[in-house]
Length: 464
Image (cartoon, rainbow, N blue to C red):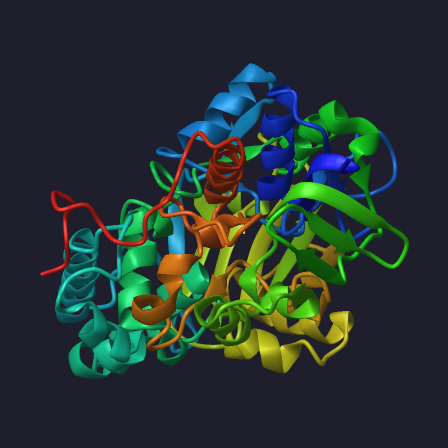
Protein backbone atom coordinates (compact mmCIF):
# COMPACT_ATOMS: atom_id res chain seq x y z
CA UNK A 1 0.00 0.00 0.00
CA UNK A 2 1.26 3.49 -0.85
CA UNK A 3 2.41 5.81 1.94
CA UNK A 4 0.17 8.54 0.48
CA UNK A 5 -2.23 8.83 -2.40
CA UNK A 6 -0.45 11.84 -3.91
CA UNK A 7 2.95 13.45 -3.39
CA UNK A 8 3.32 17.08 -4.45
CA UNK A 9 6.74 18.46 -5.37
CA UNK A 10 6.99 22.14 -4.51
CA UNK A 11 5.23 24.34 -1.93
CA UNK A 12 4.68 27.39 -4.08
CA UNK A 13 1.15 28.50 -4.86
CA UNK A 14 0.68 25.77 -7.48
CA UNK A 15 1.77 22.91 -5.24
CA UNK A 16 -0.09 24.21 -2.18
CA UNK A 17 -3.30 24.66 -4.18
CA UNK A 18 -3.08 21.16 -5.65
CA UNK A 19 -2.44 19.59 -2.23
CA UNK A 20 -5.22 21.59 -0.56
CA UNK A 21 -7.78 20.69 -3.22
CA UNK A 22 -6.82 17.03 -3.03
CA UNK A 23 -6.98 17.01 0.74
CA UNK A 24 -10.45 18.56 0.62
CA UNK A 25 -11.45 15.65 -1.64
CA UNK A 26 -10.31 13.14 1.00
CA UNK A 27 -6.99 12.32 -0.63
CA UNK A 28 -3.91 11.58 1.49
CA UNK A 29 -1.18 14.02 0.43
CA UNK A 30 2.36 15.04 1.28
CA UNK A 31 4.15 18.14 -0.01
CA UNK A 32 7.93 17.98 -0.48
CA UNK A 33 9.62 21.38 -0.61
CA UNK A 34 13.34 21.97 -1.18
CA UNK A 35 13.44 25.33 0.61
CA UNK A 36 13.09 25.98 4.32
CA UNK A 37 9.96 28.04 3.61
CA UNK A 38 6.77 27.90 1.59
CA UNK A 39 5.76 30.26 -1.20
CA UNK A 40 8.24 29.52 -3.98
CA UNK A 41 8.77 32.68 -6.02
CA UNK A 42 6.54 34.58 -3.59
CA UNK A 43 8.37 35.61 -0.43
CA UNK A 44 7.21 38.24 2.08
CA UNK A 45 9.46 39.44 4.89
CA UNK A 46 9.05 42.10 7.61
CA UNK A 47 10.81 45.37 6.93
CA UNK A 48 12.31 45.22 10.40
CA UNK A 49 11.89 43.34 13.64
CA UNK A 50 8.66 43.90 15.50
CA UNK A 51 5.06 42.89 15.02
CA UNK A 52 3.91 46.21 13.55
CA UNK A 53 6.60 46.46 10.88
CA UNK A 54 5.37 46.74 7.28
CA UNK A 55 6.00 43.74 5.06
CA UNK A 56 7.96 43.85 1.82
CA UNK A 57 7.62 41.30 -0.95
CA UNK A 58 10.93 40.10 -2.29
CA UNK A 59 9.09 38.09 -4.96
CA UNK A 60 5.74 38.30 -6.73
CA UNK A 61 3.27 40.66 -5.10
CA UNK A 62 0.65 42.34 -7.29
CA UNK A 63 -2.87 41.31 -8.27
CA UNK A 64 -5.42 43.01 -10.48
CA UNK A 65 -8.69 42.77 -12.41
CA UNK A 66 -9.22 39.46 -14.19
CA UNK A 67 -7.34 37.44 -11.58
CA UNK A 68 -10.57 36.04 -10.22
CA UNK A 69 -9.29 32.97 -8.35
CA UNK A 70 -6.80 34.78 -6.12
CA UNK A 71 -9.16 37.72 -5.54
CA UNK A 72 -11.93 35.31 -4.55
CA UNK A 73 -9.62 33.52 -2.10
CA UNK A 74 -8.52 36.85 -0.63
CA UNK A 75 -12.18 37.70 0.05
CA UNK A 76 -12.87 34.23 1.45
CA UNK A 77 -10.07 34.49 3.99
CA UNK A 78 -10.59 38.21 4.64
CA UNK A 79 -7.12 39.22 3.51
CA UNK A 80 -7.08 43.01 2.96
CA UNK A 81 -5.80 44.36 -0.32
CA UNK A 82 -4.34 47.84 -0.79
CA UNK A 83 -4.43 49.86 -3.99
CA UNK A 84 -1.03 50.76 -5.34
CA UNK A 85 -0.66 54.54 -5.12
CA UNK A 86 -1.07 56.20 -8.53
CA UNK A 87 -2.20 59.74 -7.75
CA UNK A 88 -0.16 62.53 -9.26
CA UNK A 89 2.20 62.53 -12.21
CA UNK A 90 4.56 59.75 -13.25
CA UNK A 91 8.11 60.37 -14.45
CA UNK A 92 9.84 59.24 -17.64
CA UNK A 93 13.63 59.43 -17.93
CA UNK A 94 15.07 60.09 -21.39
CA UNK A 95 18.72 61.02 -21.87
CA UNK A 96 19.10 61.67 -18.15
CA UNK A 97 16.19 64.12 -18.00
CA UNK A 98 12.98 63.51 -16.03
CA UNK A 99 9.67 64.51 -17.59
CA UNK A 100 6.29 64.28 -15.82
CA UNK A 101 3.27 62.63 -17.44
CA UNK A 102 -0.03 60.90 -16.75
CA UNK A 103 -1.51 57.71 -18.15
CA UNK A 104 0.24 54.67 -19.61
CA UNK A 105 2.21 56.11 -22.54
CA UNK A 106 4.88 58.69 -21.65
CA UNK A 107 5.19 61.84 -23.81
CA UNK A 108 8.47 61.73 -25.71
CA UNK A 109 7.55 64.07 -28.54
CA UNK A 110 4.40 63.81 -30.62
CA UNK A 111 5.78 61.55 -33.34
CA UNK A 112 7.48 59.19 -30.89
CA UNK A 113 4.48 59.08 -28.57
CA UNK A 114 2.12 58.22 -31.43
CA UNK A 115 4.50 55.54 -32.68
CA UNK A 116 4.86 54.05 -29.21
CA UNK A 117 1.08 53.90 -28.73
CA UNK A 118 0.61 52.38 -32.19
CA UNK A 119 3.22 49.66 -31.60
CA UNK A 120 1.70 48.72 -28.23
CA UNK A 121 -1.67 48.46 -29.97
CA UNK A 122 -0.18 46.34 -32.78
CA UNK A 123 1.24 43.90 -30.26
CA UNK A 124 -2.11 43.60 -28.51
CA UNK A 125 -3.97 43.10 -31.79
CA UNK A 126 -1.52 40.36 -32.75
CA UNK A 127 -1.75 38.78 -29.28
CA UNK A 128 -5.56 38.55 -29.50
CA UNK A 129 -5.19 36.20 -32.45
CA UNK A 130 -3.25 33.64 -30.39
CA UNK A 131 -5.58 30.97 -28.91
CA UNK A 132 -4.27 30.65 -25.35
CA UNK A 133 -5.47 27.05 -24.92
CA UNK A 134 -3.72 25.89 -28.09
CA UNK A 135 -1.15 28.55 -29.01
CA UNK A 136 0.78 26.08 -31.19
CA UNK A 137 -2.19 25.42 -33.49
CA UNK A 138 -2.64 27.00 -36.89
CA UNK A 139 -0.55 27.37 -40.01
CA UNK A 140 1.41 30.44 -38.89
CA UNK A 141 2.39 29.20 -35.42
CA UNK A 142 5.75 27.75 -36.47
CA UNK A 143 6.53 30.81 -38.57
CA UNK A 144 5.89 33.17 -35.65
CA UNK A 145 7.78 30.83 -33.31
CA UNK A 146 10.93 30.99 -35.44
CA UNK A 147 11.08 34.76 -34.87
CA UNK A 148 12.03 36.61 -31.71
CA UNK A 149 10.41 39.63 -30.18
CA UNK A 150 13.70 41.36 -30.91
CA UNK A 151 13.22 40.63 -34.62
CA UNK A 152 9.84 42.36 -34.45
CA UNK A 153 11.42 45.39 -32.77
CA UNK A 154 14.11 45.51 -35.45
CA UNK A 155 11.43 45.86 -38.10
CA UNK A 156 9.07 48.26 -36.37
CA UNK A 157 10.89 50.24 -33.65
CA UNK A 158 13.94 51.85 -35.21
CA UNK A 159 13.79 55.10 -33.26
CA UNK A 160 16.16 54.59 -30.29
CA UNK A 161 13.86 56.22 -27.71
CA UNK A 162 10.78 54.31 -28.85
CA UNK A 163 12.76 51.08 -28.92
CA UNK A 164 14.24 51.81 -25.51
CA UNK A 165 10.82 52.32 -23.92
CA UNK A 166 9.47 49.17 -25.57
CA UNK A 167 12.48 47.22 -24.31
CA UNK A 168 11.80 48.60 -20.83
CA UNK A 169 8.21 47.38 -21.06
CA UNK A 170 9.29 43.96 -22.33
CA UNK A 171 11.93 43.36 -19.68
CA UNK A 172 9.49 44.58 -17.01
CA UNK A 173 7.01 41.87 -18.01
CA UNK A 174 9.33 39.00 -18.98
CA UNK A 175 12.56 39.77 -17.05
CA UNK A 176 14.36 38.80 -20.27
CA UNK A 177 15.68 40.58 -23.34
CA UNK A 178 13.51 40.77 -26.50
CA UNK A 179 15.97 38.70 -28.53
CA UNK A 180 15.68 35.87 -25.98
CA UNK A 181 11.92 35.53 -26.45
CA UNK A 182 9.99 33.73 -29.17
CA UNK A 183 7.58 36.12 -30.86
CA UNK A 184 4.79 33.50 -30.69
CA UNK A 185 5.49 32.89 -27.00
CA UNK A 186 5.51 36.63 -26.29
CA UNK A 187 2.10 37.09 -27.92
CA UNK A 188 0.71 34.07 -26.07
CA UNK A 189 1.96 35.50 -22.77
CA UNK A 190 0.37 38.88 -23.47
CA UNK A 191 -2.99 37.34 -24.40
CA UNK A 192 -2.80 35.02 -21.40
CA UNK A 193 -2.80 38.12 -19.17
CA UNK A 194 -5.55 39.89 -21.16
CA UNK A 195 -3.20 42.22 -23.09
CA UNK A 196 0.28 43.69 -23.02
CA UNK A 197 -1.10 47.05 -21.97
CA UNK A 198 -3.06 45.40 -19.15
CA UNK A 199 0.14 43.72 -17.92
CA UNK A 200 1.92 47.09 -17.95
CA UNK A 201 -0.82 49.05 -16.17
CA UNK A 202 -1.27 49.83 -12.49
CA UNK A 203 -4.72 51.42 -12.24
CA UNK A 204 -7.10 48.89 -13.77
CA UNK A 205 -4.19 46.60 -14.62
CA UNK A 206 -2.09 43.73 -13.33
CA UNK A 207 -0.32 45.89 -10.71
CA UNK A 208 -3.45 47.50 -9.27
CA UNK A 209 -3.43 45.96 -5.78
CA UNK A 210 -1.18 44.26 -3.24
CA UNK A 211 -1.73 42.23 -0.08
CA UNK A 212 -1.46 44.39 3.04
CA UNK A 213 0.14 41.50 4.93
CA UNK A 214 2.35 40.30 2.07
CA UNK A 215 1.71 38.22 -1.02
CA UNK A 216 2.47 34.96 0.77
CA UNK A 217 -0.31 35.55 3.33
CA UNK A 218 -2.70 33.35 1.36
CA UNK A 219 0.00 30.68 0.98
CA UNK A 220 0.45 30.66 4.75
CA UNK A 221 -3.27 30.11 5.24
CA UNK A 222 -3.32 27.20 2.80
CA UNK A 223 -0.19 25.75 4.39
CA UNK A 224 -1.90 25.95 7.78
CA UNK A 225 -4.68 23.73 6.46
CA UNK A 226 -2.11 21.17 5.31
CA UNK A 227 -0.20 21.23 8.59
CA UNK A 228 2.48 18.57 8.99
CA UNK A 229 1.81 17.25 5.50
CA UNK A 230 4.33 19.85 4.27
CA UNK A 231 7.93 18.65 4.60
CA UNK A 232 10.44 21.48 4.22
CA UNK A 233 14.10 21.08 3.33
CA UNK A 234 13.36 18.04 1.18
CA UNK A 235 14.58 18.59 -2.39
CA UNK A 236 13.31 15.80 -4.61
CA UNK A 237 16.24 13.99 -6.20
CA UNK A 238 14.49 11.17 -8.06
CA UNK A 239 11.05 10.16 -9.28
CA UNK A 240 10.71 6.51 -10.28
CA UNK A 241 7.40 5.84 -12.01
CA UNK A 242 5.75 2.55 -12.90
CA UNK A 243 2.28 1.82 -14.31
CA UNK A 244 1.10 1.10 -10.76
CA UNK A 245 2.77 3.73 -8.53
CA UNK A 246 5.52 6.29 -8.06
CA UNK A 247 8.55 6.45 -5.76
CA UNK A 248 9.81 9.91 -4.82
CA UNK A 249 13.21 10.21 -3.15
CA UNK A 250 14.69 13.14 -1.20
CA UNK A 251 17.91 13.14 0.86
CA UNK A 252 15.93 12.06 3.93
CA UNK A 253 12.74 10.42 2.67
CA UNK A 254 11.41 7.88 0.21
CA UNK A 255 7.72 8.37 -0.45
CA UNK A 256 5.55 5.74 -2.13
CA UNK A 257 2.52 7.35 -3.84
CA UNK A 258 -0.14 6.55 -6.36
CA UNK A 259 0.46 9.87 -8.19
CA UNK A 260 2.91 12.74 -8.05
CA UNK A 261 2.20 16.37 -8.94
CA UNK A 262 5.39 18.15 -10.02
CA UNK A 263 4.77 21.84 -9.29
CA UNK A 264 8.15 23.46 -9.97
CA UNK A 265 9.28 25.41 -13.07
CA UNK A 266 10.39 23.28 -16.03
CA UNK A 267 14.08 24.32 -15.73
CA UNK A 268 14.12 22.73 -12.26
CA UNK A 269 12.99 19.37 -13.64
CA UNK A 270 16.67 18.95 -14.57
CA UNK A 271 17.49 18.57 -10.88
CA UNK A 272 15.30 15.45 -10.68
CA UNK A 273 16.37 12.04 -12.00
CA UNK A 274 13.28 10.65 -13.73
CA UNK A 275 12.99 6.92 -14.38
CA UNK A 276 12.01 6.25 -17.06
CA UNK A 277 13.57 9.34 -18.64
CA UNK A 278 11.28 12.17 -19.69
CA UNK A 279 9.95 11.99 -23.26
CA UNK A 280 11.63 14.29 -25.77
CA UNK A 281 9.26 17.25 -25.59
CA UNK A 282 9.33 17.42 -21.80
CA UNK A 283 13.10 16.98 -21.76
CA UNK A 284 13.43 19.88 -24.23
CA UNK A 285 11.27 22.08 -21.99
CA UNK A 286 13.44 21.25 -18.98
CA UNK A 287 16.66 22.13 -20.79
CA UNK A 288 15.61 24.93 -23.15
CA UNK A 289 13.13 27.01 -21.15
CA UNK A 290 15.11 29.66 -19.27
CA UNK A 291 14.18 31.47 -16.09
CA UNK A 292 14.11 35.23 -16.31
CA UNK A 293 16.82 37.22 -14.53
CA UNK A 294 15.62 39.75 -11.97
CA UNK A 295 16.83 41.58 -8.90
CA UNK A 296 13.96 43.15 -6.99
CA UNK A 297 14.93 46.15 -4.87
CA UNK A 298 13.27 48.19 -2.12
CA UNK A 299 14.28 51.66 -0.92
CA UNK A 300 12.77 52.97 2.32
CA UNK A 301 12.44 56.59 3.45
CA UNK A 302 10.76 58.08 6.52
CA UNK A 303 7.83 59.11 4.36
CA UNK A 304 6.68 59.09 0.74
CA UNK A 305 8.13 62.53 -0.05
CA UNK A 306 7.21 62.28 -3.74
CA UNK A 307 3.52 62.47 -2.87
CA UNK A 308 3.98 65.99 -1.47
CA UNK A 309 5.58 66.94 -4.80
CA UNK A 310 2.49 65.78 -6.68
CA UNK A 311 4.19 62.62 -7.98
CA UNK A 312 2.99 59.03 -7.98
CA UNK A 313 6.39 57.44 -7.43
CA UNK A 314 6.03 55.57 -10.72
CA UNK A 315 9.15 55.93 -12.90
CA UNK A 316 10.02 54.51 -16.31
CA UNK A 317 13.34 54.98 -18.11
CA UNK A 318 14.21 54.53 -21.78
CA UNK A 319 17.72 53.30 -21.00
CA UNK A 320 20.09 52.45 -18.18
CA UNK A 321 20.34 49.57 -15.75
CA UNK A 322 17.36 50.63 -13.60
CA UNK A 323 14.25 51.16 -15.69
CA UNK A 324 11.13 51.03 -13.51
CA UNK A 325 9.96 51.94 -10.01
CA UNK A 326 6.63 52.09 -8.16
CA UNK A 327 5.29 53.45 -4.89
CA UNK A 328 5.18 50.53 -2.47
CA UNK A 329 4.30 52.49 0.67
CA UNK A 330 1.40 51.69 3.01
CA UNK A 331 -1.65 53.92 2.50
CA UNK A 332 -0.41 56.38 5.15
CA UNK A 333 2.80 57.00 3.21
CA UNK A 334 4.84 56.20 6.34
CA UNK A 335 7.34 54.80 5.83
CA UNK A 336 7.83 55.80 2.22
CA UNK A 337 8.81 52.81 0.12
CA UNK A 338 9.77 52.50 -3.52
CA UNK A 339 10.10 49.17 -5.28
CA UNK A 340 11.77 48.45 -8.58
CA UNK A 341 13.75 45.96 -10.58
CA UNK A 342 16.99 45.21 -12.35
CA UNK A 343 16.02 42.84 -15.13
CA UNK A 344 17.35 40.75 -17.97
CA UNK A 345 20.94 41.48 -19.01
CA UNK A 346 21.31 44.19 -16.35
CA UNK A 347 20.26 41.75 -13.61
CA UNK A 348 22.75 39.14 -14.79
CA UNK A 349 25.56 41.68 -14.95
CA UNK A 350 24.84 43.44 -11.65
CA UNK A 351 24.20 40.27 -9.66
CA UNK A 352 27.98 40.03 -9.21
CA UNK A 353 28.12 43.34 -7.37
CA UNK A 354 27.60 43.74 -3.65
CA UNK A 355 24.23 44.93 -2.37
CA UNK A 356 25.85 48.25 -1.39
CA UNK A 357 27.12 48.74 -4.93
CA UNK A 358 23.66 48.04 -6.35
CA UNK A 359 22.18 50.42 -3.78
CA UNK A 360 24.41 53.19 -5.15
CA UNK A 361 23.19 52.49 -8.71
CA UNK A 362 19.54 52.64 -7.60
CA UNK A 363 20.19 55.83 -5.61
CA UNK A 364 21.61 57.55 -8.71
CA UNK A 365 18.54 56.50 -10.67
CA UNK A 366 16.25 58.00 -8.02
CA UNK A 367 18.32 61.21 -7.86
CA UNK A 368 17.97 61.56 -11.64
CA UNK A 369 14.20 61.19 -11.28
CA UNK A 370 13.51 63.24 -8.15
CA UNK A 371 16.52 65.49 -7.76
CA UNK A 372 17.41 65.76 -4.09
CA UNK A 373 16.54 62.81 -1.86
CA UNK A 374 15.91 62.71 1.87
CA UNK A 375 17.99 60.22 3.87
CA UNK A 376 17.51 56.58 2.85
CA UNK A 377 16.59 54.44 5.84
CA UNK A 378 17.07 51.06 4.19
CA UNK A 379 17.98 49.44 0.89
CA UNK A 380 17.30 45.76 0.34
CA UNK A 381 17.24 43.61 -2.76
CA UNK A 382 17.06 39.96 -3.72
CA UNK A 383 18.88 38.24 -6.58
CA UNK A 384 16.46 35.59 -7.81
CA UNK A 385 18.79 33.92 -10.29
CA UNK A 386 21.16 33.15 -7.38
CA UNK A 387 18.52 30.97 -5.70
CA UNK A 388 19.20 27.28 -6.49
CA UNK A 389 15.52 26.37 -6.14
CA UNK A 390 14.33 29.18 -8.42
CA UNK A 391 17.23 29.89 -10.78
CA UNK A 392 15.48 33.16 -11.60
CA UNK A 393 12.07 34.80 -11.84
CA UNK A 394 9.40 35.74 -12.61
CA UNK A 395 8.84 32.87 -14.98
CA UNK A 396 10.47 30.33 -17.30
CA UNK A 397 10.48 31.83 -20.80
CA UNK A 398 10.57 30.19 -24.22
CA UNK A 399 12.96 31.05 -26.99
CA UNK A 400 12.36 30.36 -30.69
CA UNK A 401 11.02 26.96 -31.71
CA UNK A 402 10.01 25.67 -28.28
CA UNK A 403 6.33 26.55 -27.95
CA UNK A 404 5.14 25.30 -31.35
CA UNK A 405 7.00 21.98 -31.14
CA UNK A 406 7.10 20.97 -27.47
CA UNK A 407 4.88 23.02 -25.14
CA UNK A 408 1.69 21.08 -25.93
CA UNK A 409 2.79 18.26 -23.59
CA UNK A 410 3.11 20.39 -20.47
CA UNK A 411 -0.49 19.97 -19.24
CA UNK A 412 -0.85 16.31 -20.18
CA UNK A 413 -0.33 13.55 -17.61
CA UNK A 414 2.79 11.48 -18.18
CA UNK A 415 1.65 8.24 -16.67
CA UNK A 416 1.20 8.91 -12.97
CA UNK A 417 3.04 12.23 -13.12
CA UNK A 418 0.95 15.42 -13.39
CA UNK A 419 2.51 18.80 -14.12
CA UNK A 420 1.57 22.06 -12.39
CA UNK A 421 3.03 25.53 -11.99
CA UNK A 422 2.30 28.91 -13.51
CA UNK A 423 4.26 27.84 -16.63
CA UNK A 424 1.55 25.25 -17.33
CA UNK A 425 -1.38 27.67 -17.18
CA UNK A 426 -2.99 28.96 -20.39
CA UNK A 427 -4.45 31.90 -18.44
CA UNK A 428 -2.28 34.30 -16.43
CA UNK A 429 0.87 32.44 -17.37
CA UNK A 430 3.69 33.72 -15.17
CA UNK A 431 1.46 35.12 -12.41
CA UNK A 432 0.30 33.88 -9.00
CA UNK A 433 -3.17 33.53 -10.50
CA UNK A 434 -1.77 31.15 -13.13
CA UNK A 435 -0.07 29.09 -10.43
CA UNK A 436 -3.31 28.75 -8.46
CA UNK A 437 -5.27 27.81 -11.58
CA UNK A 438 -2.67 25.19 -12.51
CA UNK A 439 -2.77 23.63 -9.05
CA UNK A 440 -6.56 23.35 -9.15
CA UNK A 441 -6.39 21.81 -12.65
CA UNK A 442 -3.72 19.30 -11.57
CA UNK A 443 -5.89 18.19 -8.64
CA UNK A 444 -8.79 17.56 -11.01
CA UNK A 445 -6.54 15.55 -13.30
CA UNK A 446 -5.39 13.36 -10.42
CA UNK A 447 -9.01 12.81 -9.41
CA UNK A 448 -9.88 11.84 -12.98
CA UNK A 449 -12.31 14.74 -13.27
CA UNK A 450 -10.45 16.53 -16.04
CA UNK A 451 -8.43 15.32 -18.98
CA UNK A 452 -6.23 17.23 -21.36
CA UNK A 453 -5.92 16.93 -25.10
CA UNK A 454 -2.96 18.23 -27.09
CA UNK A 455 -4.91 18.81 -30.30
CA UNK A 456 -7.68 21.40 -30.37
CA UNK A 457 -11.25 20.31 -31.08
CA UNK A 458 -12.56 21.13 -34.53
CA UNK A 459 -14.50 24.17 -33.26
CA UNK A 460 -11.60 25.66 -31.28
CA UNK A 461 -10.12 28.97 -32.51
CA UNK A 462 -6.83 28.67 -34.37
CA UNK A 463 -4.10 31.05 -35.40
CA UNK A 464 -4.53 31.90 -39.07
